[in-house]
Figure 1 (cartoon, helix red, strand yellow):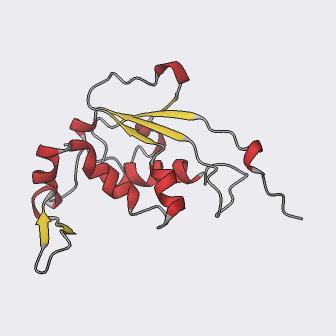
Figure 2: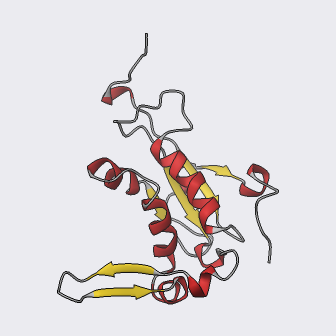
Figure 3: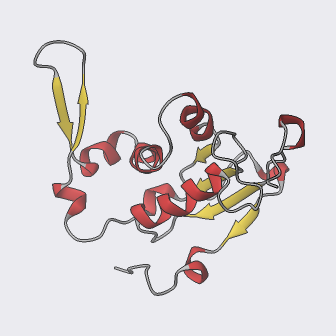
Length: 152
C-alpha cells in the first residue's frame, strides 16, 4: 500500500548551493530535483513536497561550448510579429539570475504546481543572502558530480 502525505505533514528544508564555476544545465537539474521533492522518499507528483534552494554567486556561472553566445531564448510580446530573441550573454548583462531561473523553470511541470515550486528558488549575486536564519544545508556540487563539472 502506498502512503501519501497530507498537506500538514509536509516539511520543507533549506539548501544552499554555490554556483561558482557550475555549468547551468547541470546545476538546474540538481535544483529542479530538490524543488520538486524527488530527492525525498515521500515524493508525490501532484503535491508540492519540495525544499527551498538558495543559489549564491550566480554571476560566476558557466556555459559549455559556445552556448553563451549562440543559444537563443525566445519570447513573445503578444502583438502580431512580436517575437523577440536574446542570447544568454544579453540576458546575463540585464538579469544574471534569469538565465538559471529559465533553465530550472523548463524542468518543472507546467501550470499552477510548477509556478508554486519555482517560488522556492532564491537566486543571489555574491556570497550574502538574507536566508541565513533558516540554516540552509550546503550542497557541494564538486563532490556531487566531480567528473561532470567543466572548469575553464
